Length: 360
Image (tube, rainbow, N blue to C red; front, side):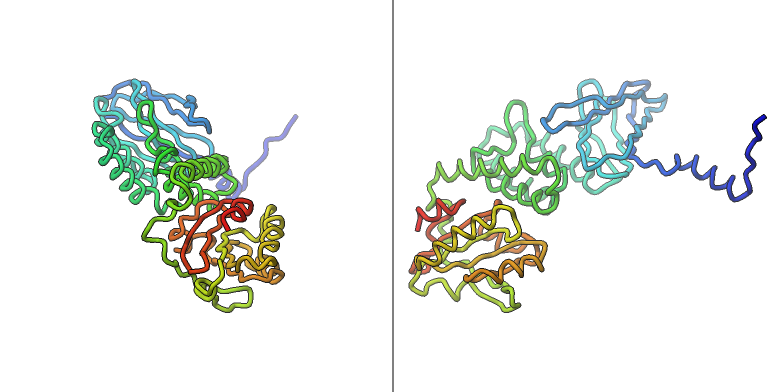
C-alpha cells in the first residue's frame, strides 16, 4: 500500500504558491470590456510573416461585456487583433504583458482604448488617425503630409518595435500606405536599418532589408545618381569620429584637397567585408582616391583589430549606426559609398564597389 506524502508547513506553502502562479508558467493576457456586448463571440487572431491572419483563440463576453484571453509566452513580439463581426482592433504584444481593451459593440474597431503598454496605446492612436484620414487618401499632398507625420510620430524612434513594421506594411483597401516605388523609400530604409540594428535575428528583418534595397534601387533608377543627394546636401557634411588609436579624425582632413575621396559606410566585422576591403585596397593603391571609412560595429575590440590593418582612415560610430551622420547621409543599408570629387563636392552615391569604380 502506497503511503500518502506529507507536506511540512513550508513545503505546503510552496506548493500552493506554485499552483497559484501556474508553477512559473508565463504568458500574456488580453482582457477588457465591450459595452452593450452580451454573449458576443470575439476572436483572437495572429498575423503570420506573410500577413495572413490565423485564429488562435475565441471566447464570448459575459453578461456585462467582459472578456479575457490568456496565451502562452511567445518567443518575440507579434501583432494580434481582436475580431468582432468583421471589425478589428490591432494590438502589438511583447513578452508577458497584460493589455486591457475597452470599447462598445457598435463602435468596435474605431472607438476604443488600450492600456497596458506604451506601444499598444500608440498603435491604437495610429489606427484612429488612419481611420480619420482614410477619406482623404487620394489627395496627394495630404497623403504625403500624413505619412511624414506618421513616421515622425510613431516610427522615427521605434528601435525595431513590431509596431513600426506593422505601420510600414499597412494596407488600406488594395493599396499600401508606404509605397516602395515612391519617395517613401526613405521611410522604408530607416525602418529596415532600425530592425537590422536592434532585431537582427527577427524574421521580419531580412524582408525589410531586401525591401529597402529594392526601394533604393528603384529610386536611383528613376532619379539618377546625381539627384539622390538633395541640392542642399551638395556641400560637405562633416564627420568627426575617433580612429582605432582613439584620435579624432575629420572628413574635412581629406575632402577638398585636390583628390577624390570615397566615403565608405561598412561593417568591419562582417562576412562580406574582407572582399570589400580587398577591392577598396585596389582603388586606394591605384592612387585614384582617398578613403574615409565609417563603421557602426558593436564589437569595438574586434573593429579596432581589423581597422589597424587598413591603410586608409577608419573611424568607429560608437552608437552602432544611430549617429547623426547616418541620418544626414540617409544610410539605410550597408555597404553604402559616397564620392566627393577633387573640388570637395558630393557628386555620387554607390551601393557596391563595382558601381563605385564606375562612378570614379
